[in-house]
Amino acid sequence: MKHSVILFAVFIFFAVQSYGQVNLEVELRARLEHVLPEEKIRVNSDILEYSNQIHGFYANQAFQPVWLSNGQLRSNAKEFIQILDEVKYDGLDPRFYHQNLILALVQSIQNGNEGNLVDLELILTDAFFQVTKDLHQGKVNYEQFEKDWEIKPKVPRFNYSDLLLQAKNGASFPSIFEKLYPDFKMYSHGREIIKNLYALDQKYPDSWKDISLRGAIRVGEENKILPDMRQRLAFWGYMNDEHLTQNLLYDSTAMLAIKAFQKRNGMEPDGVVGKLTINALNQSPADLIDKAAINMERLRWLPDTLKTGPMVLVNIANYQLDFLNDLDTLLSERVIVGKRFHESPIFQGEMSYIVFSPYWNLPTSITRGEILPKARKDPGYLASKNIEIVDNSGQVVSPESVDWNSKSFPYRLRQKPGETNSLGLVKFMFPNSHSVYIHDTPARSLFAREERAMSHGCIRVQNPSDFAALLLRDKPEWTAQKIDEAMHQSTEKTVYLKEKIPVVLLYLTFWADGAGNGHFRPDVYERDEELLAALRK
Image (tube, rainbow, N blue to C red; front, side):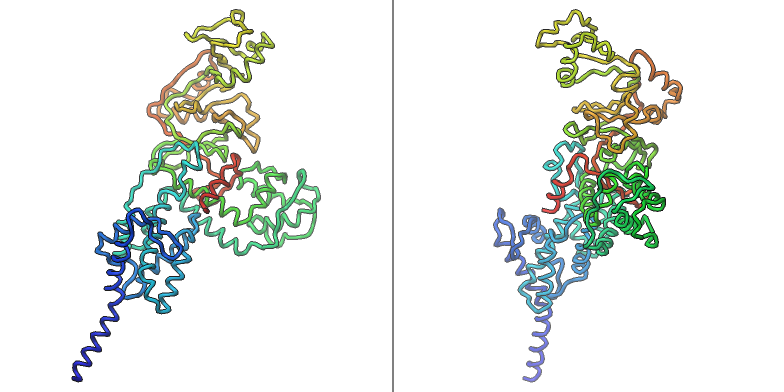
């Protein structure tokens, strides 16, 4: 009898130890089998978005738990809960992945409430499916918030259930997540910048307010904002604390700091404190975290095919064109982009040819809205602009033969090649539905401006001859002299590239360079706010 009591006690001990494992399988199956296919699983007030995938995953695994063993969190669950908090460095909010409920359930189980084991198992799995998808493909559907985003969508490379099995079998979550990140260095560098911004946000004084300025401040002038401006510059590392004074004079020390700040933020480093400089100084760490988050999402939308080979990349928000080869920058040029309501679209194409000394075929909208009213008033207007009339067969038509009193105009207008041609001396063609391309411009002075959203959508490049030389580098006969001659002819000269080169027009108001420095730009098209709202919803 005594031995029987001991054996019974041992049996009870092992039964209790295995309770979480054995009964969790049974409870998981019972819980999932009672959910209809069209229903979403609920855990407290949280809805599990990946309910169908969860059911299929556990059914294929004989309902064995991933995160729990013997009523306790496995090491992989502890690691996942920790790294889930770090998705904030990707610009994602951990709370959207059930973070608060997960922590509450963990605390409840630690307090002895085994009734929450199934809830915790299911909600950790849903959080994993959600966060892996969002890291790999983006959280927001770009088609809803970037209406002219026409870059080929990313093709998913991973089965998220397979990744969860890898985690169950011992793979670390950092190694899993790194597979999901965009394969661009600017993304990994961007994570580090956001991480640093979170640290700075803890130090950012709540008492700091926006600096207000009317007009501009030049070196040698006095202004009451100087103490606050020095303090802000010191916070961002552009001045030493020893230079913080209540002096109202804008001295050379402050000017050098302002110049460095302006250069980093894409402004002309002239040392003059104006509207753009003050707006940038008023950005808090929290503001910059939001801006960075928006653009990390845009990077997640990009296909992996953009990482190799030659490529022309235009960042509309930065007014800059880069010629890249395997993501190494071979050329950077200032550009002019579309103005508001004539925005340059976000898309990708393939550059196939260059036209030297081009005609400019005026779009119908410009012809009817701008040119014809002037031509009807002034018979000499077209000739003064070097514009000729062409019929449907391509023949030049004399202005005297046109009935200017008629409402119909069965012709097209084109501007002849030359120094005054609106396309300048060369255009770079990548056929697309927007009729957008890269070209020269006679208005060279506009490149000196900080804000260069001025075109009808096309991209004007500052040094087109340098760009042409790089594009034709595999055609040695196209020397600098020959390019210059081709740009100064009275007729068009078309040159086809040996290989088509991808052209990508992007809109990034934040990015990280190869050295790990962060760059922030004004939201010239006012697109960030809507995307941020969707990202934080």
